[in-house]
Length: 194
Image (cartoon, one colour):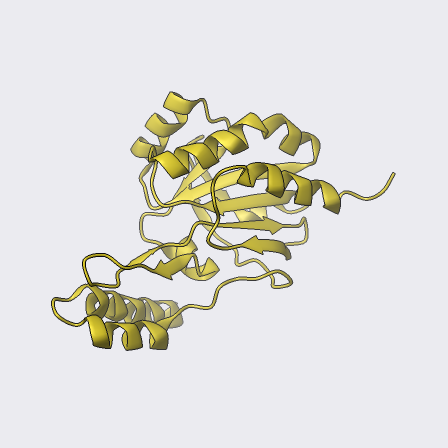
């Protein structure tokens, strides 16, 4: 717990440095010093638990034995995020047949997730990571650039986690168009030969 608080304070200090007025030059050095390592293939997936749009909470440990597709997106109901979510929705039956559970994660709250899911007929759970802890442990952040500043933003990322909790594939900086189909192809490749 103490390490988590210390890490959050370091990240918070970096965010303040990045968005503070007139510090564009020094902000990049502050970000470089405080970057959280991105989770990559071959690493154990960090455990998490978060409120879900489908009710209750969902944690990785609840899904032991199942393949989990965990995708991070910036914001509900924006064009790229909607296209990505619809891609996973349209292939939901195929993911299910391949033995995979799809989970979307953003910093939006449950009310926003519920509206987004209803509007677009999303049948998989969206996790509310309001405090960014799941983003932190997966390293789902990137340095952005807006109006001469370098704020932190969400790195549109997807992780395929096997039933033993090992990350089998990680995509960072995802293009939302046709991404779900590429993820499904990879998930299918994990199935044992019959």
